[in-house]
Structures are given as C-alpha cells and as structure tokens.
Length: 378
Ligand SMILES: Cc1ncc(COP(=O)(O)O)c(C=O)c1O
Image 1 (cartoon, helix red, strand yellow):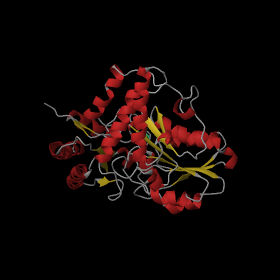
Image 2 (cartoon, helix red, strand yellow; image 1 turned 60 degrees about the vertical axis):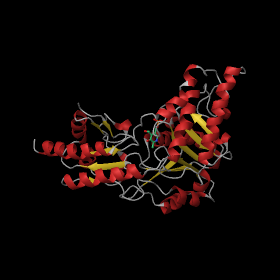
Image 3 (spheres, protein in one colour; image 1 turned 90 degrees about the horizontal axis):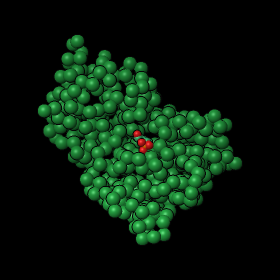
Image 4 (tube, protein in one colour; image 1 turned 90 degrees about the vertical axis):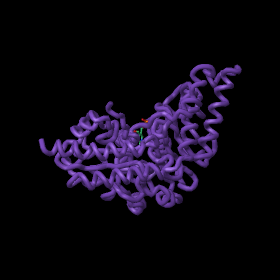
C-alpha cells in the first residue's frame, strides 16, 4: 500500500485530537449564541472568554486586546487597512517587506491606490531584512510598519524584537504576521514591542477558518467589517465558538511543544537530499529558520513535475506558498532572495509536522532521490 506522508505543514496542519475533543461540544450541545442572555448563550460566552484569556496569557496582553477574526487573511487586512485609514491625519507612509504573504502584500497594494506611499523593503540572500533598512526608511509620515515574523516559504525568522526596539520611539505602529511562528519563538507581544500581531488556527494543529489579531489598546484602528458590536466593535459577525475554543486549545498545546524531534528529522532529511541530489541547494538560512522547513532548488526539473511524482509515491509537498499553487507566478520570496525564474520553478517546499516519524523520513530519503534520477534521465 502506498504510504501517505504529509510534508506540507506550512500550508496547513492536521487537527490535534485534543483540539477536536475540546471543540466538539460547541457544535453539538453548547451551540448557543454567546450574545444571547439565556443559559445556552452564557455557556458559549464563557467558553469564548476562557479562550480569550488563554490566548492573552500566551501573547502577554490583556484579554480585550485579542480580537477573533475569520482567518489570518482577515486579521492582516484589519491590521493594515484599519490602522492606515484611521491614522491618515498623522501621515501617509507605510513600510513592509517584499517577501510578505499575499494577505499582507495585497492590502498594501490596495492602499497605494488609495493614495498611501508604500516602501517595500528588500531582504538579503537568506531572506532577512536588515533592521537598519527599516530605520532608514522611516519618515515623520510613517504610520505603519508590517514585517512577517517567519517566512512561509523559506522559513526565515525575522529580527522582530530588534525592529520593535527601533520603532519604540516612533509614531508608526508595528504589525507582525506571526502565522508560521507559534512554537518556534516567543509570542510575547511586550518583549517584542509589537502593536499588532496575527496568528491563526490552521498552522498550529487547530481548526482552519480562525484568525486572531492582537491589537494593543492604544492603537487607533477602525473596522473593515461593519455590522453588530462583536469583538469590541472591531469585527462584526456571530462568534464561531467551536473554532475559537479550538484555536485557544491548539495555541496552548503548541506553546508546550518541543521542536527537537522535528528539527532533527528535518536536518536528517535536508542532509540526505543535498548529499544525494547533485546540484541541489537549500534556500533560506540554516540558523534562525523554522525548525520544520526545507526549501530546496533542484536545477533542471520543474518542481510541479517532481511534486506529482512524489504524490504518486505518497509524499505530499508543495511548490511554494499554498495560495500560489496552480499559478505559474514566480514566488516573490524566492525572487527577492535572488533566484532566477528557472530556479524558482525548480524549487520545492517540504515542511514537517509533529506527526512526522523517522520511518516517514527514511522512506522520503529513499524515494525522493530515485525520482529525481529518473526525471533527470528521461
Ligand atoms: C504567513 C502567513 N500569513 C497569512 C496566512 C493566511 O492564513 P489564512 O488562511 O488563515 O487566511 C498564511 C497561510 O497561508 C501564512 O502562511
């Protein structure tokens, strides 16, 4: 029987059984609308309050600074549109990176159409932004800086704390898209000095379709969805209690997890692939990299072809960010670190998960190089 080895955990993770267990009663018995005044409503409200409390402890913030949204895409949109539009009177300059996820990059592109000026900063060959470049890009007109915590394609962990220090004495708000980081570095918003931070359930063995935005209480922000008064008037719409409960449980478990095993397996796989596949190279850094991430270029073969052959062998990987799949648009991240078009189209992302076993990795080490050899000889 063909195995099923899922190595696309940066796209999304399977749900943890403990998370599912925590969620289930809120689909079946505890289904009340948390806005309702009766007992059924209160049951849900208490669960949401608990989830907010759990989340706020991990983010080291106040419970009311945690805003539950539909997705991380929505949370990023709220952070960027919400602060840019609400602070127009203070300036019209915004700063971000060239390697941001599309849910950050596209709101900035939209804001350019609304009259804002955006600086898209370069990164180095390993994907790191130089904090001095942020310092130099700041003007008295800058009102928002958004820098991702960890890149979803090459796993580079950006120097968020250093950037937070630089921005301490500047009016600009500091937002970070932290979707890929939970479990790999601190989420302490005070230590990082971030004003806003996005995370979601789908990358942390929680449910998909739930995003969270931490918003410091001092931040001037306006909603992007209008309706009722939910989420302190910042995100109208009936709360999705099971997903909120599941998110908080998943975050709690993620924070307790140890990455040693995943990192050791990742290193074993990486060394084997680089050793066995001629001319292959790793994209992104070796240090300050997400422990589960490999991004590898295999010159001469189209990554989608490799992906399909791996798929036949029961190994599931990605050619880049999940949302770019199916499009031949070259990855902006790989472009920004200096890869040419051919190299970009020959690059694969392999992301391990907590469920990945040594046997899985041994099978991949045996199968992958053989597929490449076959493709190179045909
Ligand atoms: C860095 C990053 N930001 C944002 C998102 C969007 O998350 P969601 O699917 O919850 O909107 C993702 C997921 O692909 C991501 O990796």
